[in-house]
Length: 307
Image: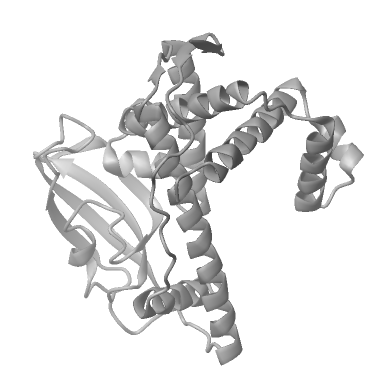
């Protein structure tokens, strides 16, 4: 029995694991979708006039939601850029805006899903009064064969990384399945906060404001944490299993490894290594040492796998 971060772990077998390694492959449809995303990311939607909303447009809208004739909390918004067909709003909402013109008010009738995040709205009918303030469309630039080939190369590299990550995840799941890992509530709460922050950062990266998303879905921080709970528990158990392997193999974060990590961060942020070192606190260095240990543990597991 090992003790890591105050939690008890009985580590199962971690050598000789028989896990198949996936082979990466880029299909034609995947490549076309990647090219489309690249075109989309390199341009912004532009205002259009003289026509109605089409599928794929961005409709900038004001909206107010009513249930039984009364406005309900969290159902209103202004200047919201809604991509028609993205599935960002309640099922059936976006499709009813197709054909609307700039300045037009549209009555959008929807039924909230039975599993909707706000219990008082789940399964309920609602009316949204929507004003289309602006219609925008994406005008995609032409792409050269060279640019398309570069996208295919990068996509293949991504697929290879993903295949390696799936392989590593499968190996870790096998170790976790054969181990006994006791997780404290404090550790779960700490990991949940971390995952919530990562989820919000991903939303913003995809140009979705978490607060507006909460308004339209009836969700909140606590409900998102609850949705992420299975992933939170799995990630925490996986990290503890890797820490246990590192401990069993006497893997430590050497000064040389830390220096290499600092060099990587310096290159990533375009700063001198010493500047990066000065900006990091003890918690950052602890996390860095932990990352080095678990990477070393993963190297041992893969080197001793049956496949």
